[in-house]
Length: 173
Image (tube, one colour):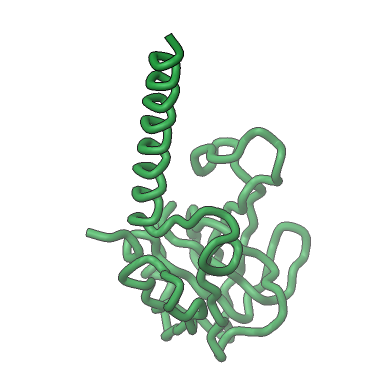
């Protein structure tokens, strides 16, 4: 009777150990590392801002949702904890900000290339952001992320520097 209990207990332990090894193998294969192992917490990549961009915090950032002449509209992320996170653009998302583009506004398109493979313990964790001259015509509704530096007045910003990145270019084929 004790032999049956011993065999059953060992069998269950072997099955659990095998399942744990399988899950750990899948995690390591995808580049996910358990907390506290093989690198910094979060295992993310730091991006150094391009030299052309101001070192001060931006006045506004968000998803491009429209344009009328020299004014573009951004929709920022909703405040954390309001229960609206992930809502579609223009339907109770975050606050909207009008950005006035002048002839003095410097427009840049983010050309930083994402890494071709997930970061590993031997890869550098720092990526240099690159930008090039851009135009307002390159902005895509609900697909362009925009950051703006300038003078803020309520929910309107007069832009001095604007940088955007189009999400459709970041997706893998």
